[in-house]
Image (cartoon, rainbow, N blue to C red; front, side, top):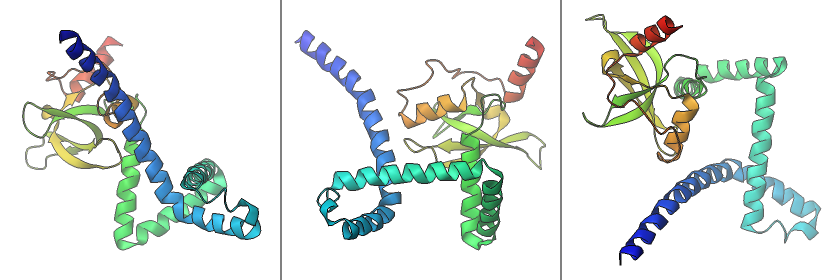
Length: 226
């Protein structure tokens, strides 16, 4: 009986990382299929008309899903190429300008772009990854510092902290937290994103959960050590 429980526990521990990984992959694949699906069906209909012999091969869900994923990768690659070249950057700036002029879409676009910029931050951009008390004292969640603010009444420093959700880090919520109530970490943004997307199964093995040092104090200590 003891051996049975031991093996069952070991099996559960082995299955959890695999299950979380599958959830993340399934989410990303589903996102790719939903985004590229309409364009894929349009292309497939053209191919079927031009090459009737390919109709059977392109009729399965697996074929459509594979084409959707490949098509989305091509689109992302092209966007990346545009964003890193002069002509492309000018084009993207024009898109930015147009979208920001649209009342509702402009706010959504600008906010999403700021979130993505926060997720792309490099590890040397301050103590970006922090812990805040949520949903109640005694529990903490991982957040990304996106902006520093000042309390107009007391003059105390505040932090705008974006809290990503699992398994999709581009979905989350924003909290304004006194800097004194924020626990800084030495995690990189990549560490935090891996931790969030995997449901906590992937990431650093240690975190200073009980620290009371502020971000400013940690930066001063590092400066003094140098």
